Image (cartoon, rainbow, N blue to C red; front, top):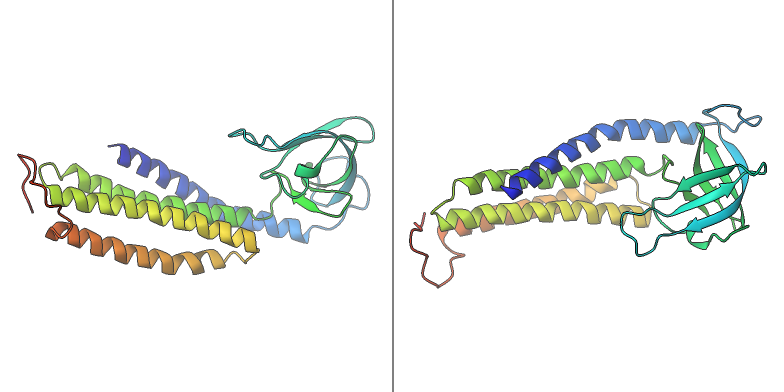
Length: 239
């Protein structure tokens, strides 16, 4: 039953991410096409404005789970501006109090921070790479969710049938492999700055290999090729 609950949750999350891909692509295109602001925007605007900030404090939260790196930046007027980041490098990890940085403001949010050395880093509000993250997450959750759901439902009808139970377990764990492979593919794409189409291009053939492996092992389990030599528990019937 636990597999079924996890599978359903993964499917719901995966479908939600899949619906976000198109919106994320449109938002990234809008950002890349946005012109520079002619003057300081007095309200949230679709143009880009470079604002000077002074770092008041920064915390990478290394070793703390579920805590995003964050910084408090000060405008020349002294007004604080709190920003968070999806990761620590390359800018926030080197931030020190009183450092001067430049924040790129778009639609009333700081979407990017640049340090004195010219290094730049997207904040948690930045639109760049969101489509890739959503696509990779959707592939991972949907592939795992569907496979785990099939294995979980199959497992409900294996009581007393050891071979069927083994085959159902094979399907479930190959679903885990599909999800992990999608995450690793996303990591490789981000680390090498490959285009978004590289995610399905790399993951697709690997997924086919895993599905072929899953089918082969499931058939072997049903045939009894994966049976150990220990006697079957009383009450089990080989099928």
